[in-house]
Length: 333
Image (cartoon, rainbow, N blue to C red):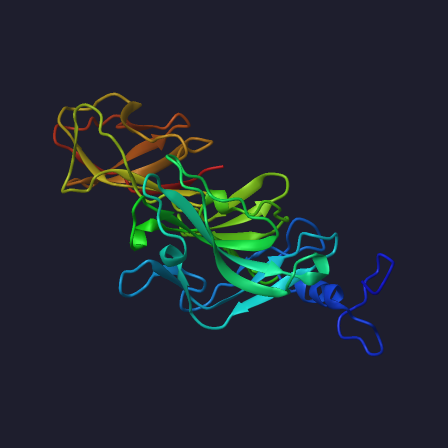
């Protein structure tokens, strides 16, 4: 480090002395943040052609291929190591079983990683390599321990006596990064960043939803869509014309649809015809006036806060086989 004070030399200054750490710190400003204000998030940069994917060879063998990628590996071996910007510029083939044949008695887990070595911190070489880390065969194998600066790409589950590797033997372990302020791709809830900042956005592949981080309330969905949830009919009501009652919440707006028919006359007010489950219920009663099938009048209904949907025929009872429609929307929260 060229500067013995907390203020580091800025990148690309005229007449300055910018060493490797200063340069990494300067470029790391452009990546999503990591565990501290001067660290970046390690991961693969999303791009076309599925970067850093580990796959079996086209002709099944004991080898795997790793597709080209660019990524970020945050240095961990000094307070201000900075972030390494790494590149694999063409497909690489690793001979997993040729170098390390399968055990005859037990399975094992191997890892494919992108590792950054740096002689400045005691390594014998300075280079980024995509490599296989062999595990230990056991009845219940675990992943091998890996030290230093690296990002995981895949796990290969090597069966006992295996002579080839198939797609089903490979677990995708890629983590993703993004530019500063960008939307971060994650596989699911477990992939949420460990060090989020308020206002950070992620895209979850398991739900295809956006989430944003609220420092006071945690992760919150952006227009979360539940899809349609079918409602269970109560006694004396049947579905009309295949229009099964269902509810769907998109963000804070709930939609209900469906058409039902009564098998008995309904004369009383406040009789429940169907129930809406928790998560879809209004915080105040929702009243609406719906269309009745085959007649020239309508009907008052309410969705109560306990989820019950009740009808109010008032002074005109509903006759047997009366058709009514349940199409309405309300806010929750």
